[in-house]
Length: 289
View (cartoon, rainbow, N blue to C red):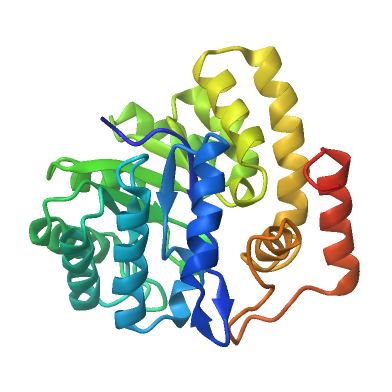
């Protein structure tokens, strides 16, 4: 089955600069109980850029073992080095992940042919379904729809996590037959109205039921309900992205009691005013007492 619905890019709890696996598992259980339909460990929201390879392999393996097939696990396994992306994808497959999330190469700024060759190399190295991740605001490159379609023609490409914030581009990807998952919480409703299948969400870390309701209403073409939930999720997203992701999201998860508010440098905690604004918005929507 294609990946769909409310999928969470999960934060990584730390304690004494080590991954806090007990906290991670407690958070996962709550997310699944609240309706989350997929887990993405080791994405941007999980601070994976600060992981050693050994940490990344262990986090994926522990998440897979703990989820036990209750929902799909789509492992973050991307890199700006094609060799490294291949190695991470193969390790995720050995760990038992259901799919991989693989980002466009960042910093190198490859052209469209370079991105195609990069994804083709990863595709040839694993049997897992792939979710391509296009987030130009972080990587400095934009995977164009025609290039995504070329990659999809290789087979085994589930979808593209689309965080380009360009509905014309989203529509063109869908028109070319490329599956789409929103990569931006605030764009989920309009993208699903065009035909996207769901979202890989940051907000779902602390508001999983709201994001699930939004996805369910959008998938059912219940536009009145979808608009209501869009309003809730968009307001939460405004605060979740008031600072660099995942700083506000982790602050929110910590306020719910699922982790310590510990970040790895170069990330640091939010300014007090931003934290309080995030928590006030959560209280407004009944997420926090």
